[in-house]
Length: 206
Image 1: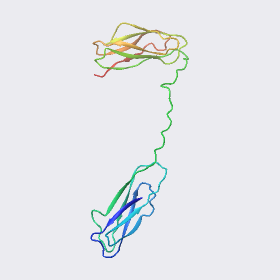
Image 2: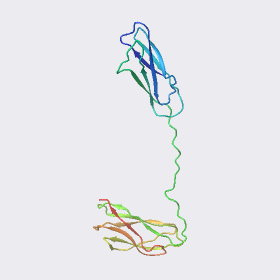
Image 3: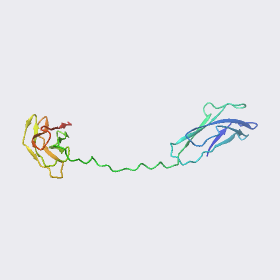
Image 4: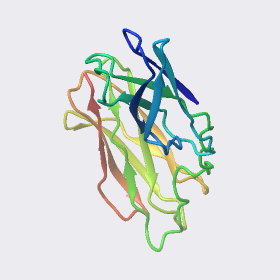
């Protein structure tokens, strides 16, 4: 429960009935919205507002008591209301279970020839090398022969052979970074692939 104190200054010569309204921000079980209390010759009275305990997690809130205008007294312009904070004491519900999900769906066997995919990575001008991810779109029946070549400012450089094992559908190809302004990795020649041209382009971040 919450107890508010009402003070009359000066104290009344006879008991003084004062009306107060109760408002609540939040569901705290407050049902009696209008209360009448008696200020005695001592000059004070207390107003107690009960709250209901529940088992629902909810945001914290407030309960406010406001003195209403009445006969025999004048309501203070600056202290006509008081607000008490109400803290919820119920634990939050447990988080939903987290199910481990695979990073990607397993590849299916190819109906025909696989497509070669080359990533387009980012690199800094201060890096000495950059990694391209080279992968197949599906699991081939045989093992294709793949010949890649770095493309530096539009010019092909030394070829790179990629050999994938029977249970491997992707690999990382590391290419040294030189003084070129544009760097890419292109498919130079292949057997057993559906595409005859694939390219990954480096984006320099600075």
